[in-house]
Each structure stands twice: as C-alpha cells, then as structure tokens.
Length: 480
Picture 1 (cartoon, rainbow, N blue to C red):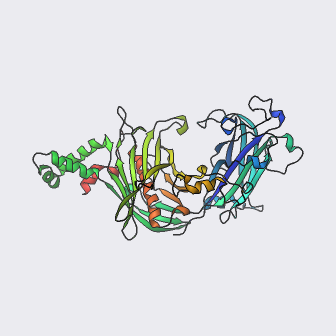
Picture 2: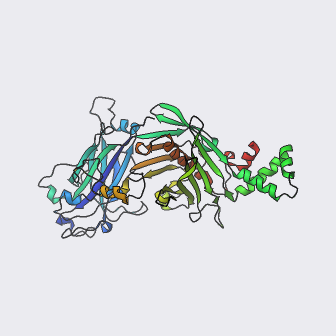
Picture 3: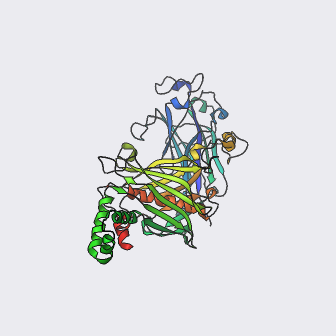
C-alpha cells in the first residue's frame, strides 16, 4: 500500500507581552511582576491558514522583559492539515508572469476572553501577525517557518520582522510555526455502507480495490425467531411466509412497527480480497428513542463494537457511542450527531480498558468529519526549546514514553472520515495516518469504524422519519 502525501502545519508556544502603555487598559492586566496564568488570561488569538476555517487559542501574558525561552511552554495552539491538492493550490504559479505564491498564516490577537460557543463578541483587536509559509518542500522534511517574538502590527499588512528599537514599545507575540510530513492512506467506499460496497485505496487519480464490505441486519432473524416462539400453532407463520405474498406484507408491517421504536442488529463485516474477514463493526446497544421523544439521547446512546480477528476469534478493538444532540448555537442552529470513541487498551488483567480518544459532533443536515487526532494532547516542541530538532515534541515526550501516555499506540493524527448529512448519498472517504497501519488488518479496523459512524447518522435519525429500504429489517426478511 502506498500512502498519499499530506502536510500538517502546527502552531504553538503562543505568549504575549505588552509595553507599559497597555497597562492602563481595563482589558489587559499590568505587565509588572509575574506573568498571568494561562487559565486567567484575557487575551486570545484567531489563527487561520489561507481560506481554511479559523481556530482559537489562548495567549498567556508574560512580563515585558520575558525572553523566548520563557515563552516555550510546550502549549499547542492550532493544527492545519493539507492534502496534495491543498499543497498544489498553496504553491501554484500565477497564470501570467509573477512569483510563485506562498501560503499565509494569519494570527489576530484580541484582548478579552474568547466566546465558548465560537459566537458573540470577539474582544478588542490588538493587532495582527502574518507569517508567510513556503510549503514546497514540507511534504518530504520538517520545516520551521518562525520561532520567537514578533511585534504585533495594527497595519493592514503585518508580518514577522526583525526586532528594532521601535519594537520594544509595541506589543509582541511569541509563536512557533512549523510544517511536517504526515503521509496517510486514503480509502474510499464506492457505494453507501448499507449497500455492501467495495472499498478502494486511492492515490492521486489511481484507485484499486482493497476491501469489500458486507452489511447485515440481524433484527430480521430475531423478529422471525420471536414470532415463531410466540405462535402456539408452531409452523403456521413459516408456512404462510413461504407460501403467500400476504404473509410477507404482514411480516414487513410488523418489522416496520418495531423500527419505529428501536434500531438494532446492524453490522458491517470487512473482508480482504481473498474473502477473509479482517474487521467487524457490530451494533451492540440498540438505538432507542428516549421516553417522551423521537430521538436517541446522550443519556442513552446507541453503541457499536469494532472487532478484529485474533487467535481464531473476534477481539474487541474499540467502542463507538452515538446519539442525537439538540440544536444549539455551537451546531449552527441544527441538530448534530454526537459521538464518543473509546480505544480498548490492553491492561495487565487482559480485559482491556476503554480510553476515550475522540468525542465531538457532526452536523446532521450538512455532515462533516469524524476524526481521531491526539496532536493537542502531546507537548508542542520547538527547535528553540529542545536540542532534538523540529520533529521533537518537547521534554514532556520522555515522560509520556515511560507509561504515562494513556492512548496506547495512538499518537498525533490517527484518522478522519467524511460523513454526509441526513438524506444524502454517502460514500465515506477515510484517511489513516501511516504510523497507525502496519498491515491490511489495521486499515480494515478504521474502515469498519468509518462505516459504523456513517450508519449511525441513519440510526440517529428522528424516529418520526422513515429509514431507507436498505436499512429496513422487513426488506432484509424478504430478501432471505
């Protein structure tokens, strides 16, 4: 398997120091004596790379005489992920004569606490910093674009420049900006997961079959079994269902009634090209409407178990819980699919411990991305703070390597999957970090997880809405 080139741009070590002229402002504390703790700082930054969505990060205040070493706290601020197409756009030459363009990282510094929901007053703008990024060689080796203090300018065009006598009288921002290669395997479903599609590996314009998926709905057989046990006449139901279309219609109606109350028994088995099963996602907790409503609530979520083969049996690898969040300002006024994924990490007892590695939401109407990215959980290193270079995560990494790291083998970017909104044709595209794929079975587990997330969008639909026929238990019965 050949990976696709990706680059991630990392920003960290944010810190702010102000001259005495800012001390009289009610929105900034006096910069005399000790610095302000990051949790109480009233300053924050809006960080944006070209036209990608902006990210927010706090900027702790330091004394006006603080040096760069004091600002190297190892605090992560933002991460931007660029595909091959993004890199081509960022380094493209203009149609006519002119220099090759470079990407621009824009940092706007505000005085005032950032809004927790991402809306509302931004605070008072102190100034902006623009860092040019030449990403041409970043897909092959790490590059450090800036590391140190830079005066904050209120001019329309601002950027990092060498310190001068005038810079001491201006507010300054410390930041470290670097880019590093982050190759990933990319897989694309050639159909919706409930239609048992093939899964293709993608590299540029080339696609080749890698896996096949088999969707099944166990609730159909459960329904038939329960109906047979409850029939005092023994084989009456069986004879009717095999002899007449009317019996099939009755069975379909019964299945439809059950589907109005719960959705259960779905599973997706991933096979390699030889037909051997290499991963399985099975719905282990039904998606049931909470009392007095027609939605799956967070207090009673549905759950999937993702399993991998081992020692002649299926072994649990991860657990996914999903529910439907009500509309809030954080979801843009619409409902969203809430999710929580736990990696089952082996422990000395052999039972495995669930460790949460992802918890967020995807808008139900327009869709979004499911992702596992632990970059923010690792200390942010800097060549100015560590002798081990730009690829180092800082001094805290040594502590993490001695057993304190709680996320098993997961580090940095792990995976992401595109999820379409309700009612839309969904063909998930899955990206998996190269470091987390040692064999085809590793990739298959992430493919099964992506299928479970996609199907959860349907499982969490309002129970007043009818499911697609591919997900209907009654249809599965008629196809038997």
